[in-house]
Length: 487
Image 1: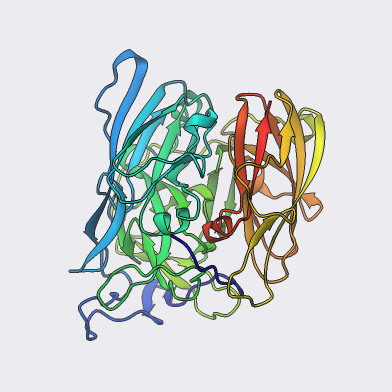
Image 2 (image 1 turned 120 degrees about the horizontal axis):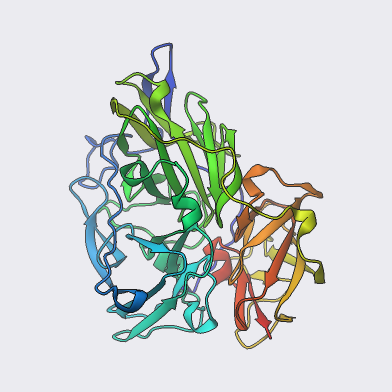
């Protein structure tokens, strides 16, 4: 399906700005390169904050008998409204764009029966999950058109905001871009016992970018990091979301193929991060910026009680190289007051300090690289090799721990690194201990050109063959992926 692989150069960024300025925090809206709604053409991208952000739909199990929550999902192409008054063809789980939320509980098994009604194979990977190889949704372990497949998730791991998406090799990038991604929230007793914002005040937000043609259809082109200038939150372009003047928990997920987000409130207000890929951090920390490379997650709390009713606060994507204006992600409109019994405890969970982690049995070096010499058919590599489904690149002894030193060898191209099966700890970035955002359990880490990270992982749950890869999905489709086998 993907036959042409062009070189990705430059930085991943966005244009357009929505600024909050002045003593009264009044919005100054700049549409940047977005097409205004009153311009010619039926598929105009609206100005920022013209549409409301929907809540993600929630999947309901068809059975809960025997201690198992069982779901049925149909993978199908449908037309949905993304731009106002325009129907856009998308690939979906059960007809939802973006994908729905599946709420699961640690220790309680989930099964999901996927029926593939597309005319191409799919593979469903639960990203961040600890599962057996046959339930991992590997790149070559696909579901043929017209067939069904049941995936079993034991959920024998702590709380985490996970997600599932297509992983069929050479098709994953386009399939995810066209809609095959969804949120999977795993809760546990530790999390439920905390007085964090919950219920309607616990909001999953799926972020991504998109490019539309004159008819409002998604344009997919390999490595199209410059053309995808429309930012979507829960499937709508730069929407607004109405909030009460109290604390909210937002589960932020970057579902983009290529885009790096650097999120910040336009007034520079505080954001409290409480979780990352593998669930709650040990301690919350206050920041003004939340970076997310593709596939990374961050759970944050924003307290809107510091704003009077009527205030509008923009969540921006800060500019990177090649741009000067921040992009509009969404706008929070404080529309009412509400009681708020929630609070953020000083300690969220217990994690072992890095110096108390199990001694590594092996230390490995992993190098990510990609052609950046201008060729039109660029290739991606792990340790100088393109992915071969029949080659085992690392063999790991079951029950042991390892340290992996991972480097982005490119000079201009960013990458990130995702490992299946395990949540790992990030020990160092650039030779120094990592900051609080990366101090918890992780399954994806970003690597800008020349960067190196050191990871600690323990392989004590399942035997079998799994993959690790760059989660800039175009790069993994180009071959930046490898196999490891636990035996």
